Every structure is written in C-alpha cells, then in structure tokens.
Amino acid sequence: MLITGILITIIAFFMILMPQVFMRLKSSRIPDKLLKKPKMKIVLRVWGVIFVIVGILLIIFSII
Image 1: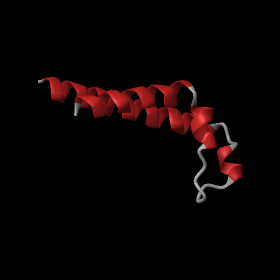
Image 2 (image 1 turned 30 degrees about the vertical axis):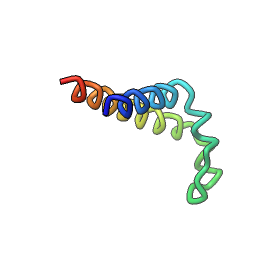
Image 3 (image 1 turned 45 degrees about the vertical axis):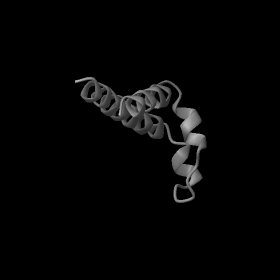
C-alpha cells in the first residue's frame, strides 16, 4: 500500500504540473474539440489534487 500511495502521488503531481501531457493521452470517447478547451486543464488539475490526497492517505494508512 505504501508503494501504491507513492506512485499515485507522483503521477498526480505530474498531472497537476503538466496537464497538457495527460490531455494528449486521448480516449476515443472524448472529442478533440473538448480536449482543446482551457477548462480541461482545470479539470485535470482538480483530478490531480484528488489523487494527491488519496495517495497521501494511502501512505499515512500504510505507515500507521
């Protein structure tokens, strides 16, 4: 659980700092027009913050 928490936290930090990299990892269900909107970066950063919190909680629970 500790390793999983560390990996989730690292990937989430990259999602917060560089959302354009994760926007290029395109799903076929998301149209290109939606990916080019600036709000998509905000959505990715919000998901990144959520994953950072989850990762930190996993690290804390594995240590306790």
